[in-house]
Length: 306
Ligand code: CP
Image (cartoon, rainbow, N blue to C red; front, side, top):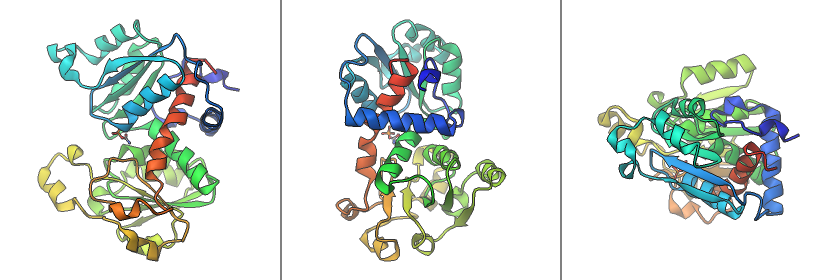
């Protein structure tokens, strides 16, 4: 069943069928339940991070090392020949000879697809600009399934920066494989791009556009908070107008279902108060931990080792 993954790139969540997604989640569960510390022995993963990251890079490194593999790469282009003008294309043409799999993060939308075209080894998109972050989506789905026991018949509320939030874009597409209702909670200037709403219309997925989180809160099974992303705003004046627009604390729980789960791809700035961290509802640190089995599954599947 896992044969069709060998050699594949994971660039956009759109490239994965519902069955592909369920297979990855299933392999992740198996690897979480029964670790395979020698599976990737002799294999090397390259991590090419043209943009800052904590979770994505380190959880990929941890995932690979816990499978017995080795890692090389960079987390800062200042120390690479990119500074001398080397292109992403040429960088990939070198790295494909040094490793068995590439994980790349890049600030430019489409850079992951370009890397995949250049590469003869599998390329995993660790985030490309405001576009896509498919491995985050897979760990988000894994978390929702673990926390709620299912992926169908859930009301999911996306809150914050839905315009530039690549994690929201990827998760919205993925959730459309399941029976779900989506709530997009954002100021007008940060609402979901029209193209994603048109996709949902075509698939007949119900959704609600809302500005007021408290109004929608009582209906939600999952609240997916996001950071207002300063680095994506072309105009700092616009950022200053919108920063801090949603800030949740324990009082939110007076307006929600008792078993609502709060997710966040992290990093957070001020949108979730620390006092929520020790509630059962706060799932965001467990979510970050789920990056390990999910990324292990992706590494093992696309290299054909499982
Ligand atoms: N969630 C996420 O992508 O975090 P990092 O930017 O730290 O990798």
